[in-house]
Image (cartoon, rainbow, N blue to C red; front, side):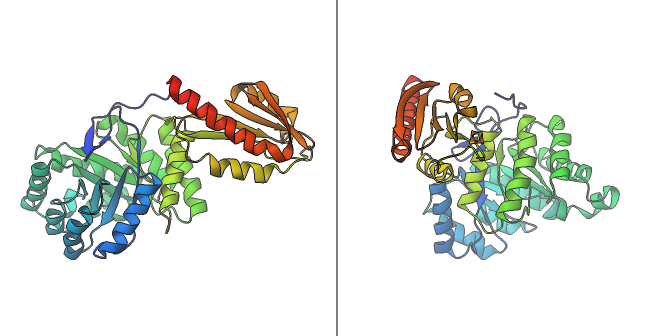
Length: 356
Ligand code: SF4
């Protein structure tokens, strides 16, 4: 398991962020927050998809007023996303579990103090969210919109809170490109011990956002950096959670669920492997126990993979082998293979869960 940078732990309602807490996955609604029914419906979709927490933006005070009714209809930890206006933050702080706000952008010291006080009274943390697209003018004038400028911006906001004795915070440093994002997180990581919220922002459509997030967040996770994360995809909800969890799993920082090893197919293939893998992926999605399963098109590499897999299939011509930990447990016609394989996977998951 990859060693994580030690960070202090904060609580977003019941979800621990930082320290030895599991890396949480979050997303954000895109409805108008004052449309309570639509926002609750999106929150419920995210809850059902396995989100650990959800952010809702509050561009106006009416959106903050709506948080009361939203709060009453969900148990998922809520984060209010606020820019510039401390009155919105004060209203939102009554109902949510975390405020995302950059203190340097909300006006004079009395306004910052008021927001800090409101968060202290309810024991809720603040997320400082630096975005390369909206850096403070004095910082951008000095450093340009660089990763170093993002770090300087974060340190500026952090100091404002620390000067008021407030340390319950997490920090994000997002840019729309992977290079600046990764560089900024890497530069800031040794300088503070606050938990980091990872993300490549404005990452685009599902195709590009998946690639950018896998590279950027993956690189950071492999460095041991990151305590919570969001995959930002234009117009997606459930997919943000699914891809986020898969990045954690494939980076090796979360041991949860099924890891499917399947071959790319080639001319040796004499079975409908593509359909079989699609069925296996769909019908094993619910399994939380960590399992390696292998679905391979022929014996060339299947036997080697099967030795490391909890359950494996090696397809042949019209037939195939099913193996557990490399031992053959069945030799069946192709038509019967997938169902038997899925039964073995369920059994392996149950056995492993009982052993752990
Ligand atoms: S396992 Fe067999 S069918 Fe699949 S890619 Fe390798 S050689 Fe081809």
